[in-house]
Structures are given as C-alpha cells and as structure tokens.
Image 1 (cartoon, helix red, strand yellow):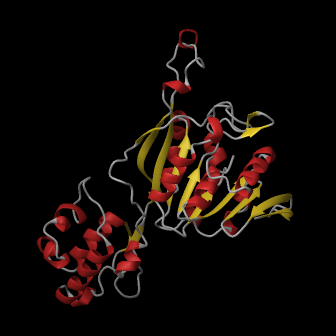
Image 2 (image 1 turned 90 degrees about the horizontal axis):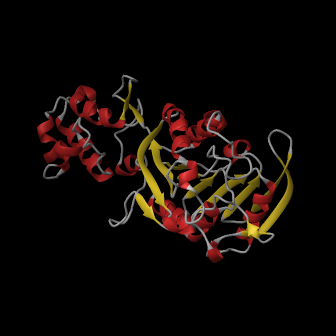
Image 3 (image 1 turned 180 degrees about the vertical axis):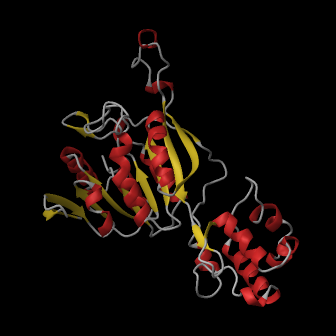
Length: 344
C-alpha cells in the first residue's frame, strides 16, 4: 500500500491521498471527490450528528440539513438505481435530514437500532441530574433509490410499482393471467401487481417471462412491453435485476443490533487516548456492506473518521473510496488501512 501526498482538490487546495488497489482515502471534503469515484453500490454515511461528539460535529441539529445537502445531492446524482445508503445519525439528527433525503430520491426502507447495552452507560450518565434517560443506542437508517421508468412510448415516468401494473394493463391482458405468464402459483397477483403495501418487485427471470407473454398475447400495437427506455426492446432479466438493490441478509438478523460499543483492542488510540469517540464496530459495518452489495462492489465512506467502512470493504472483497476532512482522523485511518488491521 502507498500513501501519496500533495494532490490537488478541484477547488485548488492541497490534499493527501492514501491508496492501493483496494481502497482510496482522500484528505478533504468528499464533495470534491465524488465525481472521480466509481459509482457506489453501497454508501456508508457516518457524518455529523449535531451532538458535538467529535471535531467538526455541530453542537446542535440546526443547520445539519444544510451541511448534508451537497453530499446528499451528489449521492443521488452518482448512485446507481440499485445503490443502498446506510445513514448513521442521532434520532433527532436523522429526523432533521430525512426530508432532504426523501426529496433527493432516497426511499426510506428501515430504521435500524444499534443497542450498545447497559455497559455503555454505566457511570457515564446521571439521569437524576440530567432528568432524561441515558442513551444506549444509535440509528442506522437504510435507504434505496426511488426508481422511475417510462410508460410505453409516452415518456411518462412512473415509480417502479405503478409502472409494472401500468405496463401490463397497457397490453390489454387481464391481471388474472399474470401468474400463468410468470409461471408462479400466485406471487404475481398477490405481490408484484398489487397496489397495497405488500408489493415487492419480481425477480428478473419472472419479469422476462411477463414481457415475453405480453409481447406474444397482448395488443400488438403497444409492443414491446416492459422496456426500460422510451425506445428499445423489452427489459432482460439482467437489466431488470440491475435496477433492484442487492440484499442477502441472513434470516436470523433484524433491525435491532445488540453489540457492545467499541472497546479493548478494537478501539483505536491516538497518543494514548481514544482516537474517535464515534468509532463503529467493524462487524456491524462489515455486515451491512455484505448484505447490500456483492464481492467486487464499490463502497463509499464520505465521512471516513477511522476508516471502518473502508476496512470492511477490504475484508469483504469490495473496493472502498472515502474522504476525511479532519487531518488527525485521516492519519489514523490511513495508518489503519496501511497496516491492513482486521480487528478494528
């Protein structure tokens, strides 16, 4: 691994880079580098919380949305339709930023709670004096891209859920034959073409069968059906699957993550003291990356801190790209990656 100093930011200021074939870490604001990074499969955002918990973190959530705005807009512009965002923040911080994420096309999936356990707060909070319950949790909220597709040759853009149903109806075929068309018992009518909250997208193989059936039995005037652009052929299974976020979470995992706060050998120290108060457990970050991307995928860590997501990218066979604006944290993260630390 090599560290290269004195590169230039797009704004003309000096920067430093740590890079090898698996990971790249920039010193500076990630906004200056997004355009140079490959499109992400996963974005792990562990930036400002509005709690004054580390250098650069505002003392309150006022202005937090404005701070995130250029990042959120850049994520939206550079993301794939299948990109997943894991957004770490305090509860009130996330609530403040969520409307901006929503406007930028990030679709809320699930709020996950990191339960650090009672050991995290023992001796650290006087609830009688503070008159509030001690905090033993953090939020990590999962988002995916909101995908819009063109209806037939009209150019009208519809969300994926509405588009699927409208494309089938455009063929003139009854919804009752979608199960036969896709060669399933009832998944098409119960899930893929429903208008209720139980909807989910069909796999690519099924979409291919639906398109083939619609093109063979539907109104010839509207062919081809289920095409992803205003012109061209029907979507292939591969093209359709590329629109859908990767997700392969083990069945025994859920949205409450019981894991102690980072301590012991995993806690990175700087001059004998904790390097970063907000360091995340490597195993938690590793899991979220593994659940929502494939080997060889691209991981972004815009607020690198100690570089946990970049380290996790290496461990899971992905490639990582990150930035850290605080020079002491950049040095800590670069040293961590340089030594290929695998235990935190």
